[in-house]
Image 1: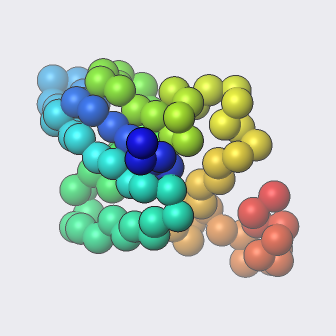
Image 2: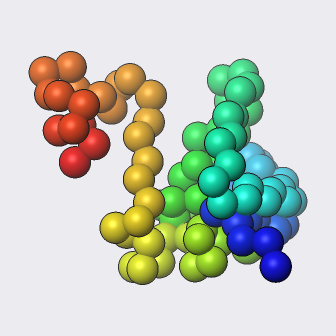
Amino acid sequence: MMKYAVRTEGLTVRRGRHEVLLDVDLAVPVSQVVGLPGPSGGGKSTLMRSVVGVQERVSGTVEVLGEPAGSAALRRRVGYVTQSPSVYRDLTVGQNLR
């Protein structure tokens, strides 16, 4: 049986009347490196927010390491760093990660 780091089925995210992500199925095997290229507004950050469990108005299934996204069991196992606006230049890499 394949183990997945991230798996989504039918992931849909709504903002107001708009569906930002629509019926996304994704399976990332454990130990796989994946990039999310795409234009601004393409849904990359929304997908990542869904994976870490902080995105509101989500339907479908989102699992990380076999657990529901955002579950307490994942809090010490999953990290997420956004683009440069969230990185403090006066801190070291380690301090930013902590």
